[in-house]
Image (tube, rainbow, N blue to C red; front, side, top):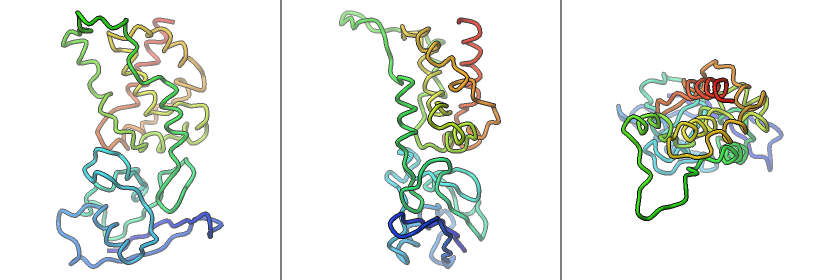
Length: 232
């Protein structure tokens, strides 16, 4: 099995370049994941850099571009990738080294949408109650693991990363806009009502296709737009 991996060390390289590695199939099992292969490759080349933590598709740290699609290496089966696998860092953000990107701007955009509940003052005698129907509106939004696969697959984010919030941030924004307990509903909509924020999305749905958790950021952004049109 052949792996073509993008390498880049800013201390020594002027630009990224590809390096080819090979693994014998006997080193891998039928249920091996891409991350398993990367661990074996790093035994050959200890300088190879990539992120990984939980190795269970929960932490979101090991996002990378695999054969042209953003994925998590720990939950991507080698059996579905073919005999030649091309690995590059997630596109659209600065490269720190090899397959590791600088996520600072991604987190800045996420923080900017205030992804936390702003409810009425705490009353120790009563909970902030929701009906089952109100609670169900949050399904498909809170499960995001902030891997960045969606935003780094989005052309609007590539072109305007300092202005367009990006799919991950807007998915979180929609989650709190529709939360019946949140009291900043209109303020949130006003802050997002901008040609360079929510309305920069062109709904090509790369984000939804790339999400390793099966979420639908594109639909969430469409819903945000519809709410703005109705309520602002």
